[in-house]
Length: 316
Image (cartoon, rainbow, N blue to C red):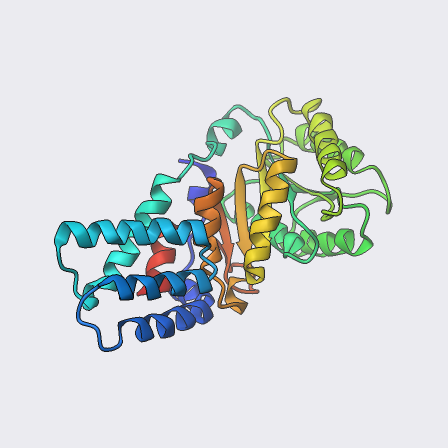
């Protein structure tokens, strides 16, 4: 079992509460779609398409979902309005399962005594530092030793915030002076992790996206330096996206996946937005697993993403 499987998914009510704004918005729109209808016809499907697109599911993903429902209608000849919600849930879950990519088995690496290194990327303001702190807490609760590396040396507040989280969670942190070489911080962090037999290393990086070439060069340099200490590092490149930004999150995902080999996603701030459909679209379009979702401000409100739980909570 992968290490993330050790984490508690959190209570269902936390997820329901975190998705409340999106759910309320979606269900209101769905109610208008089915009002006065007895069966799923072309008009219902056209209106459903508008509902999904306006909920930030994304055009491409919405088209795939609608095509699946059309096929169901064609096969069954008749689908009543009362069945639409169930069919919608089933087809979205099925779509997301088909796009699933297996995670690395962190436990297998840990058994070999290899630090599991997570390099966290994302623009400023998406909740990157907070997610790192919550993630460190989850690993610690799972019985793993953790160390943080403050490699976002271009923004003083980033280092200060990470120090606060390290103290709050009770894990060590490696930092240098403002403006220091980020790769140097990452190098020192991995040296300490290896010397102290630490299980999990989480490296913060600068949240800048003004120039893709510079971003790519910087992230590549950090990765190459870490490989000198742990050849397998970083096993995970975790991109943090702000779910409340809707379509802007798609653009950020596009830019960062072009700049570096992102292999896991965390989508934050879903509790404060009606744009939770963005999770479905990003998971589908980028073929990169959504590993975590943020559904609240409390330390335990970072949840392991479960496709079925998410879709059922959103549309039930």
